[in-house]
Length: 259
Ligand SMILES: [Zn+2]
Ligand SMILES: [Zn+2]
Image 1: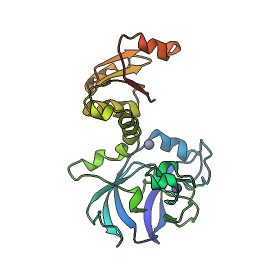
Image 2: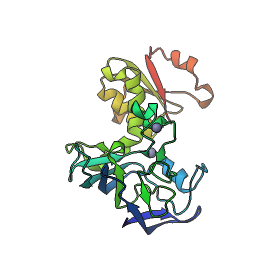
Image 3: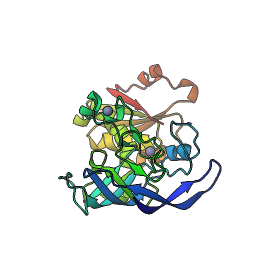
Image 4: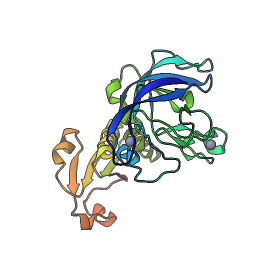
């Protein structure tokens, strides 16, 4: 067990404050990481306030699940990551690694329960914290995690921009890829233009698609143009339904709906 600094909420209506937490190494499959950046996702606000009453939640709560950092120690079994490499961690940090979904690379759907990176109930023994019950997230200086739950960030990619890719980024990348947009050439509509929607527009464009933002107002038109979506169409809120999307006159192969 080692000590490191973190930013935590100690109670529901408290302020965020600096605390010292303990983390531990669990096996030679682990990596120690100096966290350089961690995103502040709206989900973190809900987590820190215990708005969702998720299993295992307790204070002090250290949130943060958009982690970008540098490896400081690699376990003997880790062959593809070395000290100094840039890495990231997203929403999940452990699962059973012993069910058919884990075997299939779908750890997020683990039949025996996945473990959230922040405030998640410890289940499978690959995360050690001084409270012995739940995880501390990325608003912290150091973290230890199993290689399976750590992604490699190319050194050519700006580390300060990498964190949100592990949350909003993969949340948008996965459906785009699953539905064939990764091959480009489709008309893709992105409904909703918050953090996820903006990430979706950029990824869908980078994949080579025509992208249209669909929103309930035109208040974000300037931002939509800035990241070069083809255009922004909007409804009044009462009319936000599928039939009216068809009436736009676009022939969307896919549309993705994200707040
Ligand atoms: Zn997030
Ligand atoms: Zn599993």
